Image (tube, rainbow, N blue to C red; front, side):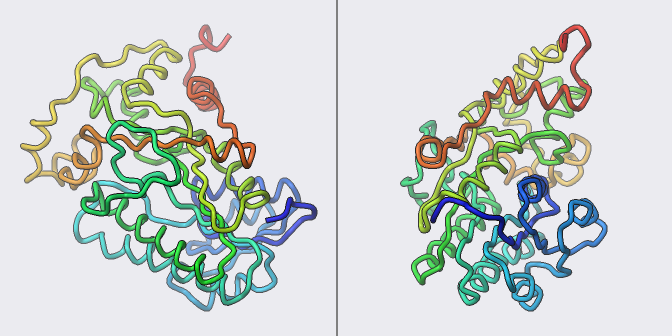
Length: 338
């Protein structure tokens, strides 16, 4: 892909989401025209206020997707269902969105001969890296998935690769965990529980994650759009860390005391049969079996060295990013912020 020289028109899915919303803001900030696929007009108000065109429809609406792309120079497909610990009854909807939606959006982009496409995958497609920090060449063993989310995103990643083989000029980006002001993900819920004093025991302290500030991920997506090479994948994660380390940083910044003891996994396993009830009481998802399989002794670690070298991607240090988020949210004591 050539360097970006002029403003373009971009069709974006997931533009009302946490990461996609930041992508849309940055696109408009630099002067690009944006058309957003929007299922819920109420959620589209922020994008509309930025000057985006709202395209009514969802990932199952082939007509809306095709019409939304008309006249566009680029497509960014960021929409997906991200949730771990979902009940079995919700798996079909997740697969329809994550796999079927990717097939429709990227397939439509191929038919429309869109010259630049970015697909937002995840480092989760690598699966459990077993303590290793892997790169884009790593292949998931595809024998055991820790969650439905991991499996459906792995399948969607394969869809993108297949369409690239058919001629789609697509760049794949793979974010890690995300945080930032206004986040509503499981990471945000974990931090909120700790800050509210509702975490006497630390859940899955050794869960390995790569945390990135939402602004860094969105910037990485635009770098991939402008400078990424078609057919290539780029990890745009943050530094490898653990839940224990992340909570420790938040504790230090806010002056709170981090839990020293871990929540016994054996106890959580014993509560699997009553997961929906217990999960609600504990602020956890209903499927405790899936939650445990995706967090107990698992690492989702990947290196962003390739994106740094080829795209100029440089995420902020975790302590700096978490402090900035907490300051924006007004959670840093005045003495600590001074």
